[in-house]
Length: 146
Image 1 (cartoon, helix red, strand yellow):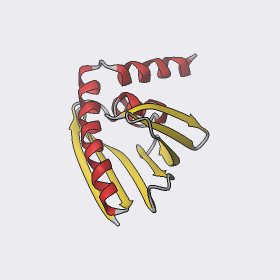
Image 2 (cartoon, one colour):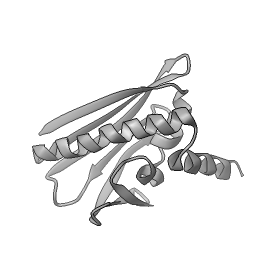
Image 3 (cartoon, helix red, strand yellow):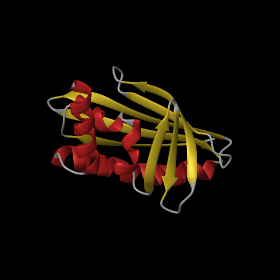
Image 4 (tube, helix red, strand yellow):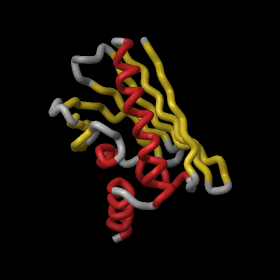
């Protein structure tokens, strides 16, 4: 099994970051190469830019620990686990970690490359307070208040 992890610091409170990173329905708005994301219960199906759909099982979505874990259940993988953690560093700063464990090993590198771009996009949208994921997360938060 191969494992890869990337981290990024974001100048924002952990709850601001988690509003996007912890919302499974809007992954396609901040993860490059994913064009669609549909959630039905604990199953999230992503569609890649190439048109291929891949089912995932949501394992953990913990708003207290700020941890999101999922497994890609596509036959392309013998095993997969993705983990996103957000850590409150205080002083309006958050560390976000995106780890991928996979078999076959090369798939960890493929997804890992995408997750590096996703972390950069997450940082951009959260710090600028603009972008499709930021707007969607804000709308979802407002809808939940009603």
